[in-house]
Each structure stands twice: as C-alpha cells, then as structure tokens.
Image (cartoon, rainbow, N blue to C red; front, side):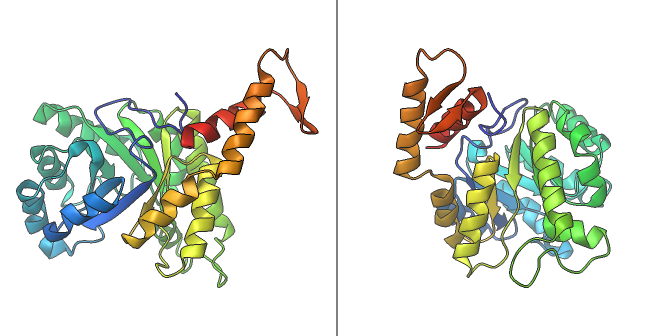
Length: 287
C-alpha cells in the first residue's frame, strides 16, 4: 500500500482511509466533540495549543466523559518532556483512544516514551508525529522509520517560531522558502518509510480559495489528508482532494489503453511509462 493511501503499522487509525479532512477540536470543549465528529472525516482532540495549561486537567477528564469513535479520533498530547505529557497520554489511553498526535516530536526518544506508556497500559498505540520544529523536521526520517508511527504531520508556525522568525508566509499568502522546504522534507520522509503524511492547517478561515488551492496541491503531491481548524474548511478540503470527472475519465482511459501494451507507449500525444500509470492509479484511488 502506498504512503498516500495510509498505512496502519501499529494500533492507530488508517490515516487517509478515513477521508482527507481532519478537524482539530479543543479537548476542553466536550460540547463540540459530537459536532466535530459529525462534520469531519476524523477528529483531533487537542490537549496542547488549544487548551490553556490551567484547564488541561479538566480537559483530560472531558476525554473520559464524552467519548468518540476511536477509529475516527486521535488525541494531540503535549510534547515529550513537558509537564503534561505523561498525564495526557495516560488519559487518552484510559478513554479508549489508540492514536496519539505527538506535538513537537523531535526525536525517536519521544516515540519510545509513548510506546513505553502504551505497554504499561496494555495497549498498542499508533503515533502521528508532528514535526513542527527545526529539530523535528531534521529528524523526520528517523521518526518515520519507527513502527509505531502511522503518519507524519508538519506545522509552519511552530517551525518558524523555533527558528526565531515571525512569519511563515508572504503577504500574498505564499509560504516562505523555509516552510516549503519543511513541508517537502516531512512528505519525503513519510513516503520513504511507507507511512502517510498530513498537511498542516490553513489559518485564514475566510480564504476558502487559498485553502482549496493548497489542499489541491497537497493531494497532487501525495499527502493523505489536510488538518483544519474550523468546520467550514471540511467541505473545501474534501472537494480539493476529490478529482473532477474529467480527470477520472482520463485516468480510466489511460489505464485501459495501457492494457496489453509492452513497456513505454504513446497516448494522446504523451509518452506513458510505469510512473505515469501509477499517477493514474493514485488518482482513481482518491476518487
């Protein structure tokens, strides 16, 4: 199975097969849990940035009180080494969740920490490693090689903050070069180790055209999903990942023409070889 399709290498959800729109929901807002689950393909219950540190104990209790389907839910836990890390992981496991998004993953030691806590709890966990610092991006290949890691995700804002910068994008919305480099590095690391890659959030909620363009690019490059921060972004992401009928028909025609063709051949004026056929198969899989 390709990385774009999502690979379950441990106890986690199949990122990519759930659908492309992953919606963050603050873990201290249990009143929103059900609504998020109804609207998104999968929900990320967030114990990190979306929750004030003083409210995190109550947020952990909310995980236990208001539970969602663990096959379509992951919990973002605070970074390895932070004061909330162990309590977050244990609360997620106690609530029945088996897929954890590990904030600011910077080393395999962070993955091993979750593995040890999972073993102590008698569960098998899947980890979505959030590579959102300079150290995390550079360590992405080693992190992706860990068998418990079911996906990599990158984050632009924390990355730039880790570098001492102040903006991940130009005024016209385009990413700066360092952010694009990190995005590509995380995607390549995931692909090299046969796991899924998740594209980061688009912060300008009102700019649906910008989100759509970025999500279309993510799908074309091989990302399995895109994370989002508002329910209104779900439909935009789904539509962006879904190929239009003309592209679907063209892919079907190409694969039909390839039947019985020995090696390289010409189709509609274009040279076609195995990589081009794989592109067509990937597009039909998304459709």
